Length: 122
Image: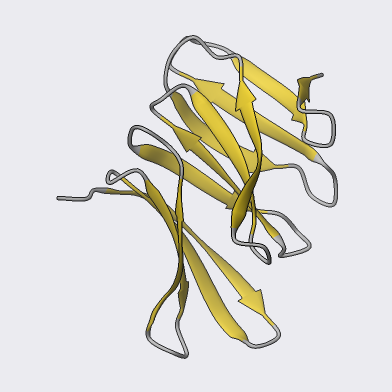
C-alpha cells in the first residue's frame, strides 16, 4: 500500500493543483477541478518523503528514502536533475522562493543547499 508522505497545494491559472509524495516511490500531480491524478512521476527506487513546488509552477522537487532528490519538469513530464550527495534518506526538500536553490534535509543529520542549474551543493 502507498503511504502519503507530504502534500503541497499549488494554485494554477487552470485551477487548483495538488502534488503528493508517496510510499509507492511516485510523485503525483492532481487536478482538483478534474477530480483526479493528471501526472505520475516515476524514478525514485524507494519511498518519496517530501515534495515542493517551484514558485514558477513548472517544476516540482522530491526527496526520497533512496538518498536522492529529483527536480521534475512538469511540462515535459520528466526528471530534469537528480541530486546526489546525502548518505541516508532525504526527508524533506523545499525550493527557496523565486530562486533556483533547494534546501534538503537528511537522516544523515545534514542540511544541504543546492543550485539546481548546476546540480551542485552551495
